[in-house]
Length: 329
Image 1 (cartoon, one colour):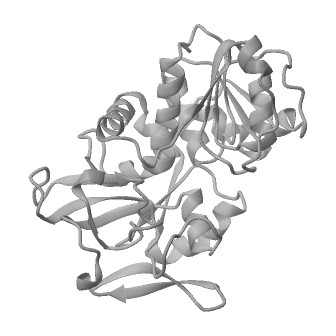
Image 2 (cartoon, rainbow, N blue to C red):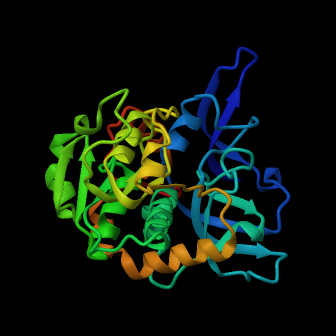
């Protein structure tokens, strides 16, 4: 038997989340079994646990789009008993039972070996949020953005994606401007590497002009909607905007003008289905480019029981940085 957060939905489509004891025989039929050590609470996990539509595809479901742990049995030639692994994406916690549990069984194709630089707890302090932020940084680099290009804007900077992006970019030598709606987090953002803090209202025009005074060589945006539209409008000639979230909304009010008159590139970052080589590159780069001290500074650890309450808090924008779930604590 093992403990898990178990989501069920009744005939009126009301979703309930409870800590439940389950039998290992109930786990899905995949080729690698894992003793889970840590998981996380991401924004998407918050949506799933609180019963918001659009995340969970079928019920009952164990949520949790991330996990790290140790292989307990394997029918794959790629992984042996005792190997430590990390999992992000592949609709785990959405269509397949996820990481907010003490046991899991997954496809070997979805796994990445845990980098030697990280413990399983540190890997989940990174989680999908940090992994996504690294993919965004890679996108900026691949489109020619360097520390000499000028300031890089990070929106939603006090959240999980934003905090990790700030820390990575700062270590790489970028001038990082952090946008937040929580001015009380200014010292925190400065401590993890932000050169400047701006109020999110500076990007708050709801129907913005598509071309504004240029400010940013690059942008990492986890917010979407008019924040993203304003950021695009302020991006320098031949700059790059990496978009990975929609916390503010899925709409985007802009025009082709920034793209055809300034050569701005808008890159969509999809962390769910990246191929193995790209995933491994991102994890290897984080091992090199993410300061473990900064990672610890942006992380809190909670128990499986506490994580249901944290799911509600993350949707309210009350969570700073990253939340690691000790599923055995």
